[in-house]
Length: 105
Image (cartoon, rainbow, N blue to C red; front, top):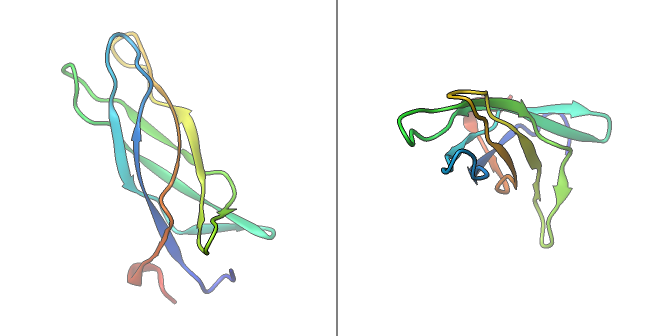
């Protein structure tokens, strides 16, 4: 991949169970941020509204992981904000990359 290949990743993640419930996180990462031979993506958002509240989240993916048959994914790991006396952790892969006209040079 070179710096002219802009792309994003979709994600749909279920948080861990904390305080008796879970939340869902879904969205699209930002464009690639190149770090030597690999790259990462920043992401942020708000969880699903469950049990009368939401949590915010945001972080940076891990480096790219090649997939059999082509393409790549990234690991997403982190913790939501602390709201209503609890937070949720999460960990899951992104979807495979998707080209985006928004980010093409």
